[in-house]
Length: 227
Image (cartoon, rainbow, N blue to C red; front, side):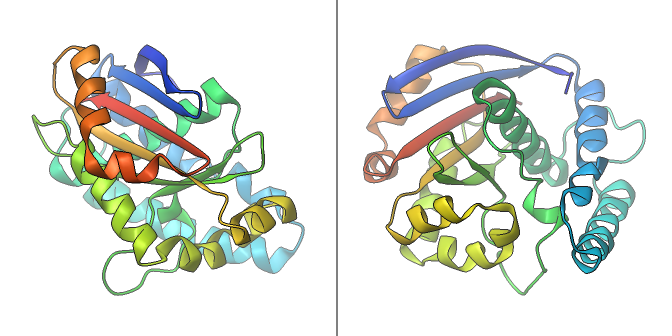
């Protein structure tokens, strides 16, 4: 996916990775995010026709809604509505392309909608077959890492990840699900960031109490998107 550049990739600790991403052209970035969301080739990976048909119906309905209400044709600015889609998709594509982790589509495309928060925003599986649960937050002109990390801790305490396993079951191998059952899991915090130095941003994240609480898990990835 074009429209952005990775300007920093560093290890905070052996199991904690930090990326910083800079959209190069907002109009192009929005277009590329929508194109990426609209790519439904993943549906063909399912063997059963009824699975393919079910995912096709859910995904197309979501894509049409996004096109009509959130990322409209020729959009040239990020809004409060489109911001989290942009942050989610850029973060998701970054870990897939830079770390060669499993490509699971954005949750909005395949999950059943319910009342209230719909759970984590995106998922992946690393090379050790550990399921990663991703949460994205966008706040205009602010570093939103605090909100993303706080939401992850809240979801983990509420066992939202256990609930979400039912939604991503077909994307996950047996080993990854066994690992999850043994509390081996990881998280991705994706968030908008304002222009401060990366060193300062990383130091602030390291001091965050929710970040400290998450360090015990198998892997943590932080993706800062300059929006």
